[in-house]
Image (cartoon, rainbow, N blue to C red; front, side, top):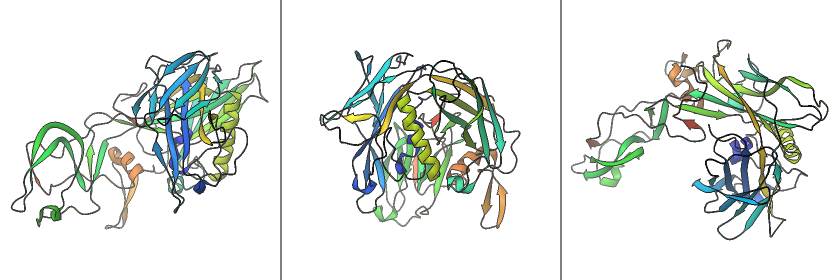
Length: 437
């Protein structure tokens, strides 16, 4: 299971966050170098991840993009005394030791130093206990998803995630809820004007007008750009500019789709009471196929709750996380030498209670988002096969199977090949716990 990373960063390419205290009047195009921090320490035996990026805004277009911060020295300070170093696994992604997990009642603080020597420190976060989730119910609705948000092209069918929990008495509790959807994926790679190759290729001949490649023993497992006729002075047929070849998965594969909304709660006015049928999210009806849902309940500190509640208010008012916010607001990380520098994001710690729910979708009505497509030639709407529905839901196009090569390959086996299911935060080849065949 991937770590519970702060889900607000799912749409970082169009979103800057808010402060836990006040809104800051920041015009995004004027701020081209803002650090974005994303991290949470949990008590579960899973990877504990810190992500560091820079938000960079184009001075001409005003569009923001993100660049990973690499080669930083990242560490977590436990109870103000113990220092746990992180190692960089991929660009901008820093992981604590595999046997590390947080513990209730202990404090955690993020400290990192950039390659230029600039140091940053978060506030201390005390991991609070969290009660167990008593019950999870998923109810299908044709109007589950909010309207007029531009999400899924106004498609609104989905599942409301309802949750029951008994709030502990005589203590202040702050909650955050999110979900992850596991959907079976049958298509693992798409190559734009190219072909998937399991092995490296070496050009051995380009005359007369026929390109011949020899398969090499070194693995490639990636797309190979189709050669250009102009490059070799040949007149063979190039690939159509819009051709995308898609390749089926070599093994079983699951896409991991996270929630993209913020759901937090304080027991200020209901301390010790039962929280019943609390709506904590909406899951889009992507496909007709059964799926697995993990619902998580996290404890928050008071300041983290305040931060995320303001974020929740902002995203509800603007139509969701995919919409840009009117201001960039700081989190709980600061530059130790320059407190005026604005740092976006939040580092926190929380205990987690988790429930996995098998979603058979037998109660669903209407058409799934990936269930039908319009055939422009026949001018009719046709059903999408079940093994292509998730692909179509994400790409709004059916997968195109490789039918020919515009060059010759010596060796390498039959074509088209299958593609690897590459593990990541959004995909896994490992059978999820609770999955049913």
